[in-house]
Image 1 (cartoon, rainbow, N blue to C red):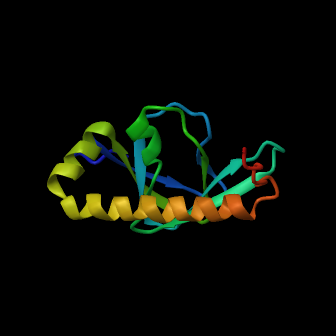
Image 2 (cartoon, one colour):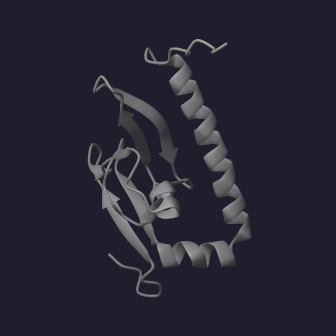
Length: 134
């Protein structure tokens, strides 16, 4: 259902196990979790699931597709029943202008996810360092 005051923000709900979006989807919005937990994951070259992170109330996900205008780089699935706020590109710009503290917390979230992804890669069976060239 749409927020009548601001159509750039739309409330959505998903049941545990529901997929919110799939890797490769072409979309230009992201989500803020109001309630519940969302799992972000991808698949490796062996078609095995690789969990990237869990996103909980107050956190956002799906921003990369909005920021770089590329297909989704991972899949999002509800681990529990979730209530989300879907934010359009225009809504994102409005949030940046009106809530600079939110923008700073979003950058912190990106840094945390990047560190987590680095750990996932290091722990992966596929992570084999290439020999250094002489």
